[in-house]
Image (cartoon, rainbow, N blue to C red; front, side, top):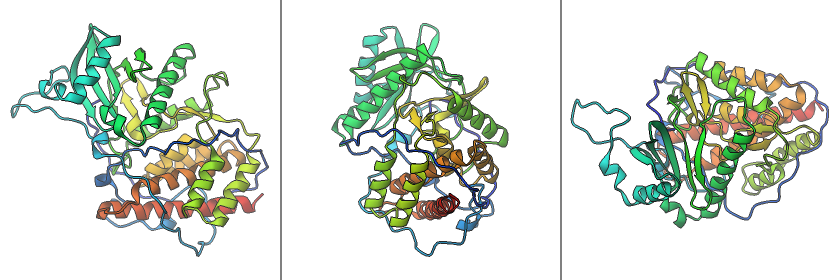
Length: 414
């Protein structure tokens, strides 16, 4: 998010599903009242979408893996989504680069006057100076329609200031963006009192009313720049990232510190109403949810994309905690599975972790996976998609059909 560029590593293709075993029942999760605000989509970069193997071949659905072999293919195809949410603006995932003389070094401490003088950045810096008068801006890391990130220093300490962008005030998702920012501030403050067992930036200062957050700047690089990276991290890096996510998920802070972040029944109804889930799909998911009602919820990052994980010398660092809270077990693993489309070994590891807790943990993972893939389809399947994005859309539909068949098989073993 706020570090240097990645070094991509080629990865392998995807594998196949094995049928689940019998499961025992558990009641559904604690329900959260449905929200009244539209859901703000996450930013995607369609230029990096791909569904090809290392040799350039398109991977068919049957070779995609959950670690469970799916039963025979279901005849009905996934219908096109109904009313779609717009994609986030490209600026949200764009890292600004400083103009410089050819051959001149671009050190992280070099001030970029032109980027720091745009109206939006100047407004953000004015808000930062109210809570951190000693903040010295050095570099604009991101200037998007949702957030502005500015790297700087307080004394000799490197920090990053995160502010809500002025453009967000005019967005139809303004209320939700503000609520998410307030939630992230609350999460960082909660982590001061209840330190998690994973590495994250230390909170320096926060202004809840003006939506300003100042954090320690951790040295390292993002595990990926894109939402769906063409090249995944190395196998060793993937193991380290999965270990950090698993450590967070197994942590049990006081139950009143965090809140449930996803109304599963509402999500199923929403995707069913727009045609992304068939009647049978919705019934299967509700059947699994009925058996998961007494299952303990799991603390999850909620947006465990590779772009939200830094590979630091001391190990993985998780950033962007806007969606942190209680979920059904395996939500973070489902997010990672959905974006690691070209890494067979990583998907196999994720599937093994998801099933290591037994059939109930497996069922929770499958419910999460279907809903995550529905969200990704809603983000990507928009008019005007280019060839690479159409390949990504086909891959997402293949993955979602595979996951729905796995859900159907899981229901059949109950």
